[in-house]
Length: 337
Image (cartoon, rainbow, N blue to C red):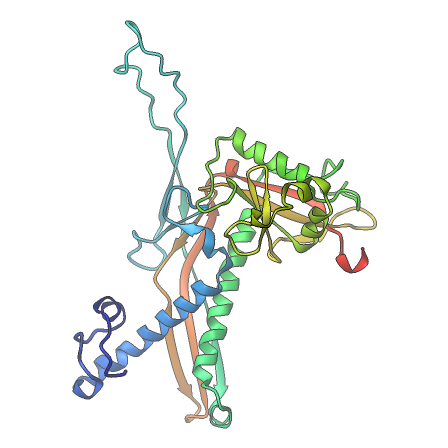
C-alpha cells in the first residue's frame, strides 16, 4: 500500500483495516495479509469486466438485454429467481356497465430459476522463471485469468442464446439442412427479425441506435455489405451505433459483427457451413452472479513453484424466448470471394 489517501468507498470494498491508516501503522499482520487477496480479486473483476464483450448489454434496468441478478445471494449454490411480466391486454373501455373495479387484469407473473455454478482457473510458474523475466509474473497471471473468465462468460451467454426455439432461415432455405451457398444473410432477414420481435411486443434494448440488436459473424457481415438495400440505408457516416463492433442499423435493428456467432457444417452432402445470427430485445436473457471473484495464491515444492487462481459462481438462461430469434444462413469466406 502507498501512503496516499484512498476513497472511503474503495477502502470499504477492499480492506478490513481503518480508513487512512498507513502500512507502517498496521500492527495486525493477519489483517493486512487478509486484505491482499481481496484487492487482487477486485483487480481481476475489473479487468474481467473490461474484457467481457457481453458486458455492454448486461444490467439491472428493464431495458437491458441481459438482466443481471445478484442481490439475493447469501452463499454458494443459492437459487435465484428472475420474474417475467406479460403485457396488459384489456380494452380499457369504461362506461356505466364497465368499471375499473371488478374488471381488473390479473398480473400474469412467472419466473425462471437460475442456480449459479462454480467456475475457476489457475496459473502457475516456477520461481526461477519469475526471477529471470523483467515483468511481474503475478500481474501477467492476473491478466490471463481475467481474459479467460471473460471468454468463459461470453461463451456461456452465447451458448444459451442459440438454444431459443425461434429460428428462421435465409434465402429460400426452409431448414438448416437445406441451406446452400446462395442462402446468404441479407437486409431482408433483418426486416423479418425486426417484425418478429415487434409482433411479440418486444421492447427496445437500452442504448441501441435502432430498437433491437442483431449479432452476425464476419462472414455474414461480408454478405450484408454487398446487399444493395443495406448499403443504401447505411451510406451516411453517422449511421453506426454506440455498441462495440456496430456496423450500422436497418429497420430498427442495430447490427454488430462478432466472432462469437456460432457456426457448424450442416447435414447436407457435401456440408455447408451455417452461421447463426442472434437478434434480441430487452429482457431476452438473464445472468445470475454468485459470490464475487475470489483470489487464491499458493507456493509449493519448497518454494520452487508459485500459483494463483480465481473462482466465481454464475448461471445464464433465456428469460423470454419470444424476445430472442436466430437466423441461420450461409456465410461467404472473403478470401474466396
